[in-house]
Image (cartoon, rainbow, N blue to C red; front, side):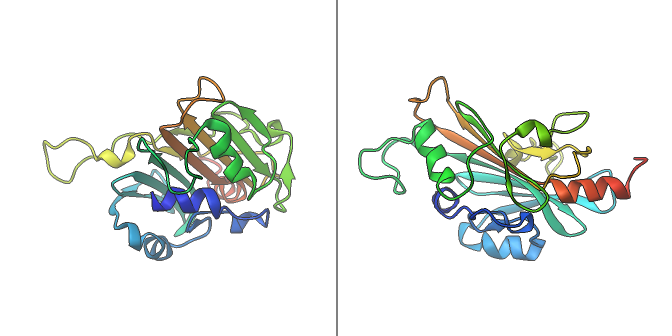
Length: 223
């Protein structure tokens, strides 16, 4: 719960791309900085390699949330966060207020720029390469594929045990090219979201440093 409270209230103001921050987690952090930021939540960590020598993943799991960090050259270039909202009163809302789709979206929007696209529980923010907000999401869509894909299971260290639970619902960025004048994308997904009045039971954030991904693609043009 601590992460969600901070994430909804302490989202960064519109600034340069490398400073985009959710709760205590920011793009550009090292693994040590990530673990320091999450110390109070006491997560369990798992590491997973990628197909590239300079990209790997760090998965963290707590009681109420799970995280997947994409590290390029040791720095966070993307992260996905899943948080489960328990029923009943939530401490970051006024007494009696329910965590509906627009209420949760509004808490983030107050701290960021105007969303580029809203589709009930799915909301997107985009910035250009200078960190300025973009109102047209089509300007920063991937050129040839989906921006994110399901993370997939991480095998247990013990043979015969099921996959690590922490990857359930998490996403990882696709290694694909984007238009050059793009900085960061933020995606908020809320469930359920049949209508704007739906009371949300889970939220997922996906934050991607598009500039870093484009630079990574430039290093691996043939992969």
